[in-house]
Length: 192
Image 1 (cartoon, one colour):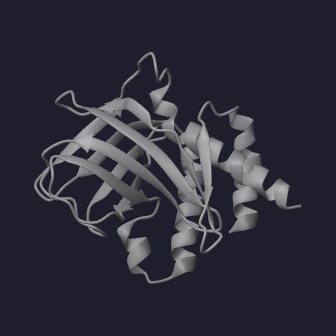
Image 2 (cartoon, helix red, strand yellow):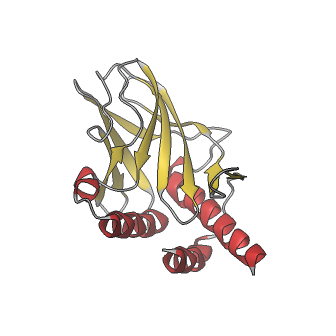
């Protein structure tokens, strides 16, 4: 996994310098490092005009996920059952499964793994890691056009929303993943 992330980091460098800040924390007990990007507030908007915010996180040597903050009455969001689908500029649709606890509130902070329910249900860590790596590569090479967030009763489509704070919302994944990969590379260089 480390080799693949470093290769993806080198590949992603050709995209350009990320404009996203990261925070790296080390767990006092396990020693594992996690990298979190700054929240992009209002980078997307639902069909009824509600703003959506998001950030990304990565555990070094582990998994990458997206945290979505949304106000929408879509029913409940269920751990390992609810999903987001991301339609890319090349027409491909990626599916990510919810990893956060089940919630039935109208305002939610939801965590999605960059792998599908089928990948997770396979029971194979190798399948999940390969899916995440493949999805990262696709997200680095394409803008997003629509994100569909599905609850138990309905779904909402989220579209990019340009603002003074976020001038290229369609590049959310590119910029956040690039920032994470740059930090992974920096941490790797520090260990050498």
